[in-house]
Image 1 (spheres, helix red, strand yellow):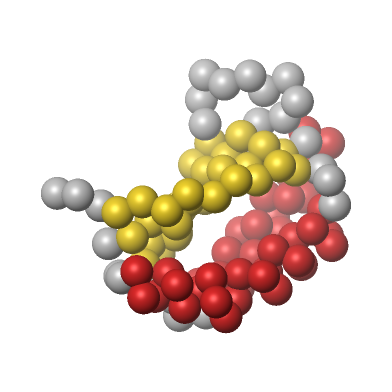
Image 2 (cartoon, rainbow, N blue to C red; image 1 turned 135 degrees about the vertical axis):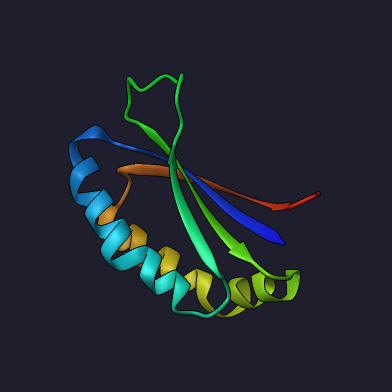
Length: 101
């Protein structure tokens, strides 16, 4: 299993509106691509929240092919929509992990 992780520091001023948008619009759009089987929203603890809290969004893909399909076909448009809505009120970085049992 592949986990696509997006870590985001969000400005406190937009936090509540952002969380609503994330849960009601953004995550459903990502899951509706069919590339991921589930998602999780996690808040990082014991971090410097002076500039806003930090969250990790994790999306589970059954294979690298599904993850690459998302990147090739959907990610650019969904990132663009995020920046159009929230501008520079967040910082995000992405990582890809493989589950090892």
